[in-house]
Image 1 (cartoon, rainbow, N blue to C red):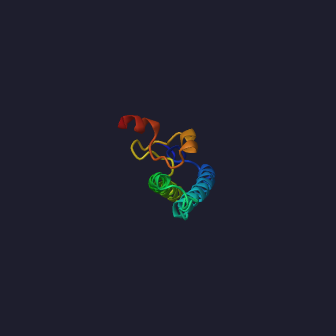
Image 2: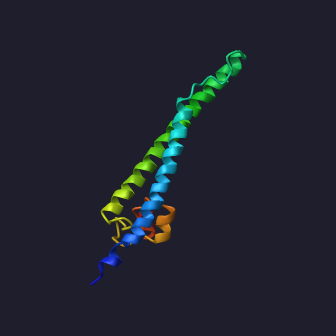
Image 3: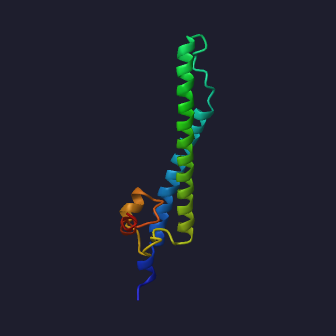
Length: 127
C-alpha cells in the first residue's frame, strides 16, 4: 500500500511551491496593472494638429491596440486566477496531483508551469 508521501508532495515542497506561486502572482498582478493602465491611458498622442489621414490611421491603430490590450488583460486575469487556484490546492494538500491519472506531476513541470493540473502523460492522452 502506498504511503501518503507517495501520493502528494511534502509540506516542505508545498511551501516552496507556494512561495514560487505567490511570486508569480505578484509579478502577474504588476503586469496586469501595467496593461490596464495602458488601456485606460488618455489616448492623446499629440496627433491633434496632424493631417486627417494620419489621424485616421492613428485611431485605427489605437482601436487595435485597445483590443490587443484587452485580450492581454483577459489572459493575465485567467493566469492569476489559475495561480490562485493552485494556492487553494496547496492549502488542501492536493497540489501537484494530476486530475486525470491521480499521479504526482513531475516537479520540474510544476516549477515551469506552477498552475498545471495535468501530468505530461495526461496531457499527451488529450492529443
